[in-house]
Length: 308
Image 1 (spheres, helix red, strand yellow):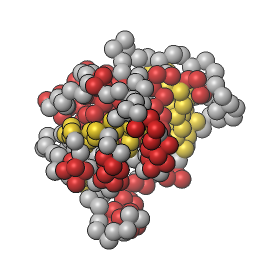
Image 2 (cartoon, rainbow, N blue to C red):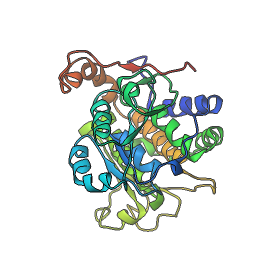
Image 3 (cartoon, rainbow, N blue to C red):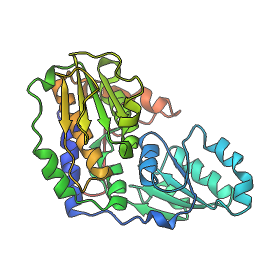
Image 4 (cartoon, rainbow, N blue to C red):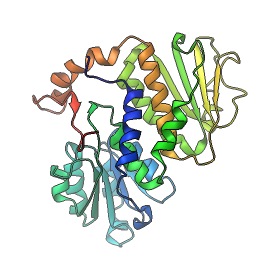
């Protein structure tokens, strides 16, 4: 457990890294109605990158069905691109690229592994440097991709989140909810995944856009839940004595919101029993790889492409 850092530490190390090693620039305007395909938070990263573009989003569960459903549009030339987002450039990304090429789509891979099996067959590859991270964290993995599109300043982000003053009773809640500006709704499923990875069934962490929060998500108020709102002052959600409003600066974009929320989740991780650290070794060495039909263990600490 000693060599497994917490999520908030990973966020700070990632911001330091990208301050010194800016990611390659990704021009989203180069793509016109592409399939954008990824698994887990790679899928959510695709949603973020193409949040202001027309695109068809798919994951490992529905890509085969979707690409078949759009066959006429592909044959007409309306759709001719596929963007595959994959940290490892392995697992599902290989067959996804093979399938896209079968339909004569131009394939672009976003990955941290330039020598991966997927990178060897993609038409174009963007390689994003990353740092060593515990399995599943993928902070530098996906933040690098997001920064490549938003061009935010990592040092400014770090200075901002390092100045946070947490509520005095922050550690004592058994439930935490985030309410985010509507623009950043695609951060919400990323937080849901982090909740599952770090806490499983042992702690409640919820995340909603402001628009979704209005739809009966806070019918039940509790003094045991801290509602953390970014941007607008929270006047409605959660117990009035148990709200934390975080003001956002004008130069806000997705990487900053990701950093803020991941950093706070890391502080929650530090305040609670170490569920992730106590279980991740068994997962990567046993039932994790077996679910993919392999007996080869996953890396407990996933190697980055550059050292800090």
